[in-house]
Length: 206
Image (cartoon, rainbow, N blue to C red; front, side):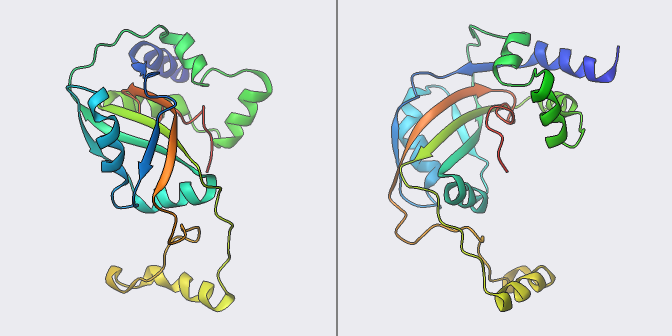
């Protein structure tokens, strides 16, 4: 059996994905970058009884997502018992999530991932045996207008990686304005899954 075929069959057999439609459409208020994870869990935690969550976010990545796209593709690691009884699983589930493509769509995806065997990466992630809460939150605010750094500052920024961490000064090129918070977001997708990258094909962005 070809390696790619084995990886695809493994993922189809082992993938666990439980949609949480009761969370979709809910509005959440985020108070700051530092408290975003706890802000979300405080507001939806009561709807996930028996589960404990651990944030696995990089604050700078979150800030860039909100600034560039006005959404937060969020993930938490979860501990607890889940009753897996999804309406769709196996290959139909992979197709629903966008991982079974044909024709031009398959060709474009192959170019996007630079011929990488993406199914192998999914298999390895599932083998880690972890459980995740995935939420896709869309902000009320519009994306932040990109502002390039001045030339002299860009030149200094190229030297910054050579400095010790405590001497580094820069923030992400796409940062949020000071008065961005409190910010209201709406949950447009939600699921429990054993695959953190379950939405890589559904919401492709960079």
